[in-house]
Length: 534
Image (tube, rainbow, N blue to C red; front, top):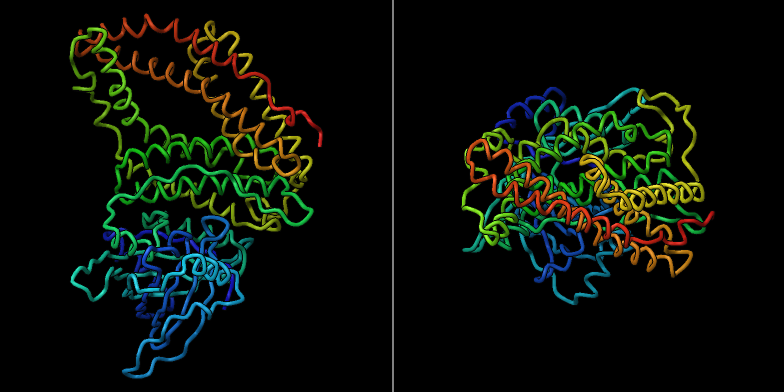
C-alpha cells in the first residue's frame, strides 16, 4: 500500500502517560505489540536522505515499510508491503528493497542504494506496545483520525555487548480520511489537555543517535523555500504562503523539539529564535497573497510567538552581550565586576523548555503545520467552517507583483531611514533594524520565485542580499551596545563600578550611529527585476 502519510506526533511526558492512556481507553482500543528491525548501510546513507526501511512484526503479521520525508512537517511518503502471518518458530523474513519498486518512496530508496553501493545491515530495533483508536470529527473539519499511543523502547546494536536503549512514549495522530483541519483540531485538543509537545524525532532517529552516542544534535538552520511548480503553472498566492511557512517550520520544529525535551544548547535556542523571527516576517509580509488565510491576521499567532521569542532571548541576550562587552571594557581600563550578579530579573526568566512547551506556543505550531498541509479546497472555508466570502488568492502573476511592491517598500524605508539614522529617536532606530531584517528575510523567501525566467535574477538577488549584510551587522552591533548600556545602567543601582561602562558606551554611541548611516547608504538600488510588471 503506497501513499502520503499525514500525521502529528507528540511526546508524552512520563507523568502524563496515565491520563493519556485513560483518555485513549474511553473508546474502543486495539492493543498490538510491534517489534521492528531497522536497516541502513554502514555509513547510514538512507538516514542521511531522510529514508527509513524496516521490517515489523505487527501482532502475528510481518510488514515491510519504506518511508521518506515529504513536502513539509506533516507529510511523509510511505509504502507498506504485507508479508503475511509469521509461522510458529519461523525465521524473520529477509529485507528486500525491491518490494517497494514502482512507488515514489521506492524510487528514492533505489536511487540512494545504487549511489551508495553498500550492503544493508540491521542498525537498530524497537519493541513497542501500541494502543490504537479511531476518532471521527464532525462539522466543517469532518475526518477520521487514528490515535496511536506507543510505549516501549528503541534498541541500538540489538543483541550485542554494546547494546543501548532509549525509552519511547509518544502519541501519533494520523489522518485516515477527510479534512486535514479535523486532524489539526483534534491534535490541538489532545496536546492542550495533556501537556504534550510536537516532536520531530522518529524512532529511527532515536536509534541513530544511540548508535552515534549523541547527546546533542546540531541545530537546524534556515533553508530556502521549495516551491512546487506544475508544468507551465507557477505557484499562486496561497501556494507561496504555504511553501514559505513550511520553510520556516522546517527550521523551527526540530530545534523546538530538542529544546522542549530539555536541551539548553545555545545554538538550538538561537536558531529557534531566528526561525520565529523569519516566521513572523512571513506571516506579516505575505498576508495579502491570500485574503482567506485567517492565520495571517495576527490575532492568533502574534502574541504566543512574540512571548516565546522574548522569553527565549531574555537570558541568552543578556549573557551574550556581557560576554562580548567585557573584553572591550577590560581593554579600556574598566574595573572588573559582573553586571549580572544580583540581577533578580534572571531568576524570573522561565527555562527554554518551559517556553517551548507552553500550550499557547504549541497551539500556534499545530495550526501552522496544519496550514501547510491544507489543500486549496480546504482554504475556501472560514474559521467557522463556512464558505469563505473573501477574494480568491492572487494568481501567480499578481502574487509576484504584490511581492515586488512589498520588497520595494521595505527597501525604500531602509534607505530613507538610513539617510537620517543619527537623528532618529531610539525606538525608530530599533524599528529600522527590524525592517532591515524583514527586508532580508522576505528577499530570501521569494528569490527562488524569480530565478526561473531569467538566469541573471538569482545572482542579482544574491548580490543584493550580500549588500544588506554589512548594514545588518552594523545595526546589530549598534543595538547590542544600546542594550549593553541599558544593562550596565541597571547595574549601577547595585554597583557604582557600572558607571564606567555606561560612560564608555555613551561615548561610542554617536560614532556607531554614523557607521550605521554609512552602511545603510551602501545598500544601493533594489534589483531591477523587482520593478518589472510580469
